[in-house]
Image (cartoon, rainbow, N blue to C red; front, side):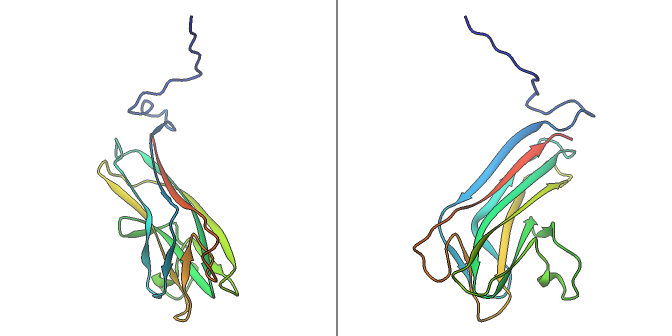
Length: 168
């Protein structure tokens, strides 16, 4: 004889209107290979992009990024919904190319760090939405490395982007 005990059962379409908070679906991109970027223009970090189609335009999307970077000077990282940067700071006078969710400043290319961002986004659509991570070094003499140290590639790491549809 089997017994099933639960505290709550949430329908696949989410909880009823006004209930909110049920997880409807989860998508993830997990990056294990290395990436490097030398251009000071923002570029997509290959492998850190994930698409999700919300079941309702009232759903929210919980986005979580965990990224391992190394850079000789400084770099910027940013999160985009489609082509729109989200979760970026506004306290700068340098324009949109100087905004991001993480500003990593390291004094040598063998220094590395993991950066994270978690955002509860409200895309307001029930069509496919793509979330991705971009990065760039801030100096033309620098390189941005993802999932490895800049001074050598003998150490490997991983990065990920996870999105969850949360009922509205």
